[in-house]
Image (tube, rainbow, N blue to C red):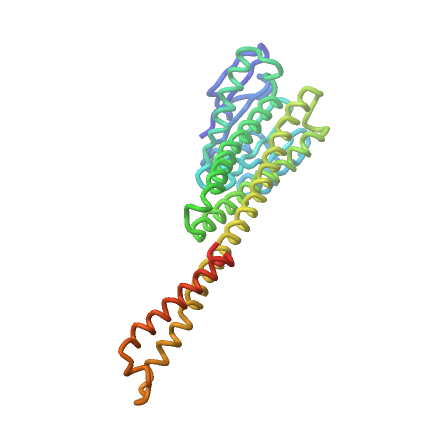
Length: 319
């Protein structure tokens, strides 16, 4: 599907243009959005806009690393949107010229839909610098980046819950959840860090921004990506701390169990010795004919067991 947004020289908005029958010079600038295009629509990148073949090839061979290339008067952006369900990156390509913005994406992007509506509102209400292709490109990138935040905030909430579950759930379950969070953070890092590096290049480029105001707007996106990258690193450190804490907790529990078993074994060792002695099958055991021998041996065993328990308790072995 292709949708078009054309701005006349008088500042009016027109939509639904037929690109093959439209002369770009008749308008101040045009935004054409290629969403889930079919091959016939994709060919318009060449036949209508005459973009460089290498740029068109990058559009069709996903997934490219975020980058910025210059082709004569057109700047070519490769951006990454975030699939909130799978946390996989999805490529969004932008062609930015003096009077042209073309967005190309093989999956529908809610961020671009939001940007589309915002650009129309901004132009109709004459808000600031909105009536330029650079402003529209900024809006697209800003909306794509804004959609990174909810996912990362949700992961931070999950980490906060995991931090309080140490004494409630099995350590193996907690460790599995921690490693799952680390895996998702790694996916986000693979998307956000390259975007951060790209925006640093855009902020310092002399080809894209035309004035100081536009540089400030792109710098704001770069600041957001810096914040996101810092959040990811902080969360990864937190998962590492949680992992170490859970492993230490598991080791402590194992040590406690082993100590308890050791104490029980130690108590029963002399009792087992006594029972073993009087369980031997010799004919001559003087105590066997003693009327109170059974009760005396039981009493001795109780005294030994009780004395050992008291001794261990005084030494703090049961703490």
